[in-house]
Length: 583
Image (cartoon, rainbow, N blue to C red; front, side, top):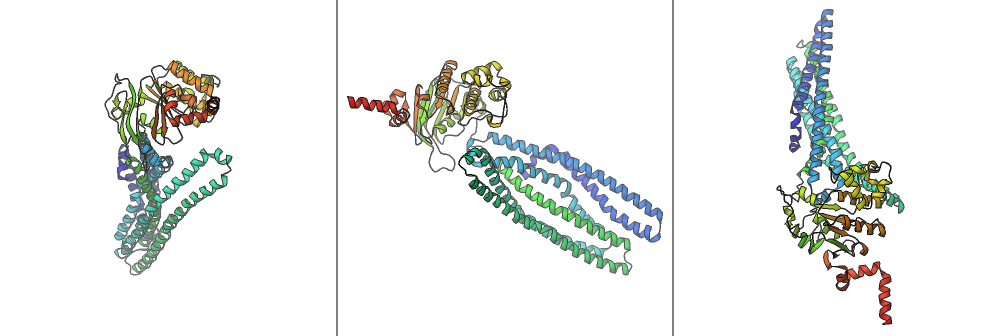
């Protein structure tokens, strides 16, 4: 939590004013029992109506001033806590944007969503209550004890004995419950993860009639959350009854001692009422303090989880100086590159070596899990190679600043991702300065012009979250258009035309060669037809480069490539076999 205080610096004034006004309110609250005692001892006992009315008016005035102080403290505490939460949330969001895919894979989407929402909200509530009550409650407790000593020392000794015992109970329960609240938040992550998976995969679940299994899995995760909540709830629930028992015992002892003092004439009856009021104030404040401690426990647990995300260091660092594109004819060069995912026992790709010249079209093909996407992701430095070196435009990839690297490489991932907003807004994500003419040209190249023209509003057509009001093929074409609007030097199409029919796929490849001449294009596909006419084809097999050449060269030299070709064109295999038989 200490490291997060920097996000409160902007609200130093509010963080000081809020507790100060609460302390002023406390002062007025501590004066009230003395006025009540004077009202009884002087006004009621002596029958002085003037004293009665004046003291009553004074009590009303103190109540109004205290109310004003309370409102002022609440305003500044709310301003500070909301501002603090906004700063923390923004800091976490900005930090996440700088993490590499390795860290994002490790932390997980569900965890990050919980950190940015539930955890930050808990921190906001905890800070709000702390600014208003963290000083007020102890000040009331010790202030009431001090005021009791000004009335009668013997009675005040009961306060002196009761407060340490109560403190041990309150802080003991707090120390036990803090670790448990961390478990609560971790269990909440699991429930959110299950919820997210089910909502995203609801169609698949229903298609295979797995509703009962998913309900059982959700019940298990929810049951685990319930169990840990019940455990921490039972421990926290001890706080109120224990404090009530102790404070009531102290009250009984106080009244007994005060009665003796009244009989001996050491204190007046009004003073006994004042002592009881001070004890009652302690009861109320300890109940508040108990609730405050529970909230602060949760906040501290959440703060630790948020800080853990902020402490996560990006594994990929970028230089600050800008690199211009060199005159090298190399677009991409891999030299003995290997990569292992974090936590994996074996490398995903091993000893990959190839060179792509500027303006070439490179096809990458291979079985599922062969490492095709991993190679593509390393070109954009989304993952850092664990061995070997990668050069872009003749310069080591680690020498490119992030902004320049992003401008150099345009990536169309396997899963087409569109955001809620207009078609124009989605296109301008890649290039804010793009004109409508540029957007239409990119849409035409991506074979998406007819899609947009057929929608109401055309470029102003509103896409729903995730593009759910579009078909799979339409989403893919729009994401390809968005990458083209980016005007990259290297375009990577990671199996991004899998939902297109063969004719549209062919027109797309023809349009890219026609409209984007000079652009280096990587096409990752399972289809031979998509990469057959590439200048060079890379064949991946179990994380290694099994073949590198043109279609004709690979048909003659690469068995893996021939197997893929024959699986997709079985009729030609049969025809070749028939010709051999005739021969």
